Image 1 (tube, helix red, strand yellow):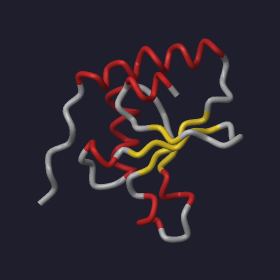
Image 2 (cartoon, helix red, strand yellow):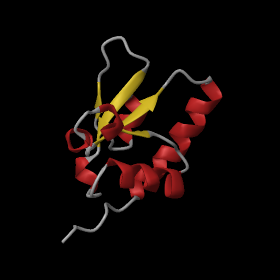
Image 3 (cartoon, one colour):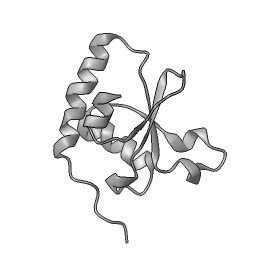
Image 4 (cartoon, one colour):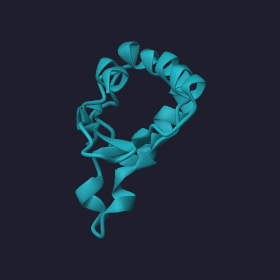
Length: 95
């Protein structure tokens, strides 16, 4: 949770699940899929777009999901990569 908070990803505390949902609306991307692409391409961390978990994809357009049932080394590598977000510039406003 702390690494996600420090990266500015606004995590939602899970209630017994092995994943964490994060609200990424403040980053300015048009949707969760575009933000997930940014994370993979520019940061090197894969996530799942939240819209894939809703019958109405628009309901999850500002949410991404991280799974944390990973090896400790994998989580440490993700934390190092997510530190790049501290210096990332949000997407330009969509017109």
